[in-house]
Image (cartoon, rainbow, N blue to C red; front, side, top):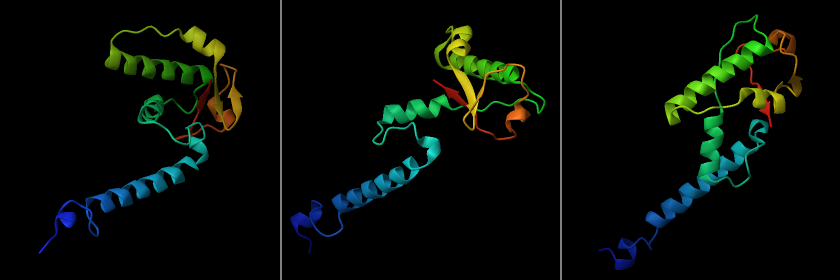
Length: 133
C-alpha cells in the first residue's frame, strides 16, 4: 500500500529526486564544458538566450587550399548574408565597417593582410578562425 506522501513525490526516489539528480548532472556537464578554452567567452552562468546567440554565431565556410585572407572574408560574407536572408529577409550588413573595425584571428595571430595566403598562418582543413570584436 502506498501513502499519499509517496504518491506526491515526497517519498524515496520520486519525481523530485530524479529532477534534482538531472539538474546536478546538467550543471556538472555545463561546468566541465565551460572549462574548455574555446568557450572562454561564454559567461559562467549563461542564459539560454546567450547560449543560443553564441551557437548561431558559429558558421562553417570552405575555401581552397590556395585561398587568401580576402577569399576567406568573401566566403564569410556570403555565408552570413545567406543565413540572414533565410532567417530575416533582406538585411544590410556594412562589411566595409565590419572589416575596418574587426579582424580575423588564428592562434592569436591577426589576419590583417588581405593578400596573405591562409596556409602561411597554418590554416588548414577544419581550422578555427575567430572574429575579434
